[in-house]
Length: 176
Image 1: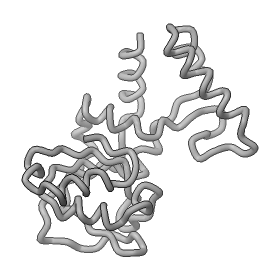
Image 2 (image 1 turned 90 degrees about the vertical axis):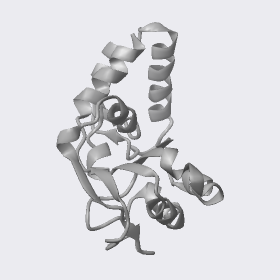
Image 3 (image 1 turned 180 degrees about the vertical axis):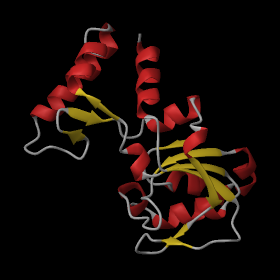
Image 4 (image 1 turned 135 degrees about the horizontal axis):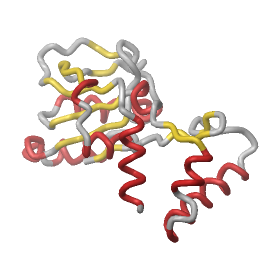
């Protein structure tokens, strides 16, 4: 299950049907680097994040330092996406229209490029990035989104670094 926002759907499923936990593999784009947990996806539902962390589901957590590295320049997007079929043209045109209709740059826009946001989760499924994985006890989060010690919880995989180039190459290869 790819979770690109708060963990409310995963938490709801696990709370309603706890027996699915051993069959569920969650890849979550969320959380900040240790020891500070504050980040947009986490801030939307701290209780849901804690419910998932208390469960027995397998979790791969891609923290902000990792997912923020997934960045691509506009020139490369134009060269490799625009003009490559109807979907590529549509995606590139949507990006330009979005940017033209904004008064200020978004958190996704970084200079002359675009942060790919949630896409590292797909890249992680296709290429496990074993070199950047830490195994730690599943964290719990305080109301202020700090990580809380939770030595009794099962281990999860935490990624604070992602091979952004690998994610981008997978995206391009699958779109051609």
